[in-house]
Image (cartoon, rainbow, N blue to C red; front, side, top):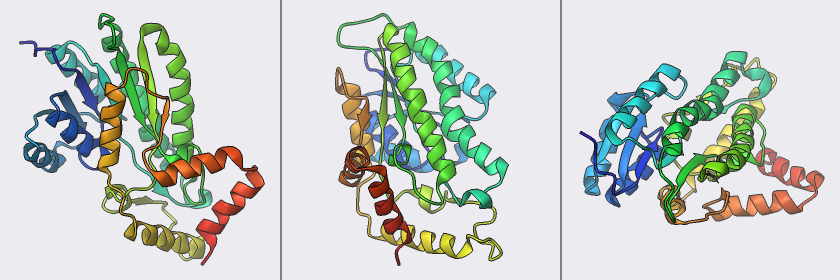
Amino acid sequence: MTTPVESPVVLITGCSSGFGLLTAARLSSKGYQVVATMRNLDKQDILISEVDRRAGNVNVIRLDVTDKDSVSNAVSQVASRYERVDILVNNAGYGIGGFFEDLTDAEIRDQMETNFFGVQNVTRAVIPLMRSIPKRKGKRGKIINISSVAGFSTSPAFGAYNASKWALEAFSESLRYELAFFDIDVLLIEPGTYKTKIFYENAKYASLFDNPQSPYYSISQHLKTKVMGYLDNCHKDPEQIAIMVEKLIKTENPPFRNIPDIEGQMLYWLRRVLPFRLYSRIIRAFFLKE
């Protein structure tokens, strides 16, 4: 039986933790029909608990963004139950730390498979469902891609992650032009650093990151200490991302780029107005000073 379609159907990837979990829980409590997806369904308990706490309701299904069969199966389930997707939130992703020479070819490709090609896999499967929705005044399909400040500003030891997010931003901008013909909006959210599992339980490092024989070993350890020290003093609420997603859904003509935190906004402003030579000095000083 088809579910009633009075409220928008929102498909979110990467809901086992972090931004995805909070966004799914928040939107479900606001009456949206939320399809929360994750690669490993054994991790859904935390999501369900948070959704229950907020008196919401979600449909949890398995979706591995790097597996096209998994994507196809998940989207088919959504099509069968809801016959539509109004909002797609491409959130699934991770970051790997490590200097280029310490990273293997496979590690770099895996980073791109999830953060870039994974977004394309899901988006390609969902677009037909969005195009099939009759145009209605004040309502249109929206694709919200969770990028990062790393999508416009790079840093040492995050080259693979930076590359994946820069690619995502270029893809999103191009896709925005293409889908405008079908009344589908494409938007970016570019968070700064938040204290989520991406830096703790879900943290990934280059295979040679902790190898004392690496020429980058001492710098790597310094940078890790620097980043973790920053996180210890980071008190920004990850719920800001969920709040911004909700705001973008409700806004008729939202901006393309959306940065939720002051630090990220300042970084974006500096990146735009400063000569690169001066901007790069600031970045080096932040990451490399004692």
